[in-house]
Amino acid sequence: MTILRSLPNRSSLTLEGRSNFHPLHSHTNAIEGVVEFDLLPNGRLNPDVSPVGRLEVNVENIRSDIKLYDIEMWDRLDIRRYPKIIVDLLAVQEVDPGRFYRVGGEVTFHGVRKKMAGDLTVRQLNNGLVEAVGETRLDVRDFNVTPPKLVGIQVFPEVHVRITLVGEIV
Image (cartoon, rainbow, N blue to C red):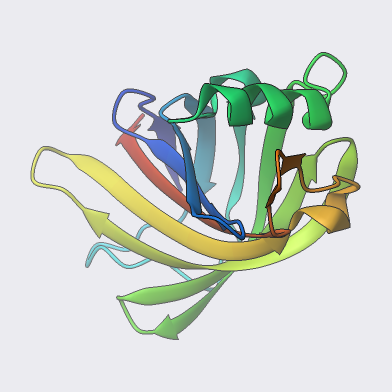
């Protein structure tokens, strides 16, 4: 088994949403966690061995370019009560051998735990690091979050989520 520890300065979480006025982009590099998986000698994930791992993001570290939007987002997400987004990895399925996977797990966000799945690519970098890039879409209403409305701007509930995890093998 291979244990991968997140390097927060190289990893990122990007959230892309839309409003009736303009696109919204939020971002953080503060992803922490450890993932354990079976990495085969050819660099592929072994789909017969389910990954185990937990990634955590402090919600207050997620920022956009619009300070007013950030304040409204943190208020709606009640970050004092629910300070973290937690992703527990539970399964992997190889879709395109050696290139593309479907990963499943549970996301805890705003006090709600929900099963989710997403697309994943994994590659070994030249410097001995591993990069895993995962993407999915979520509807914030599934996590009991009401999308903000700011001065005539309505934020739509669907969000594209992209996690880039760069980690060192320990």
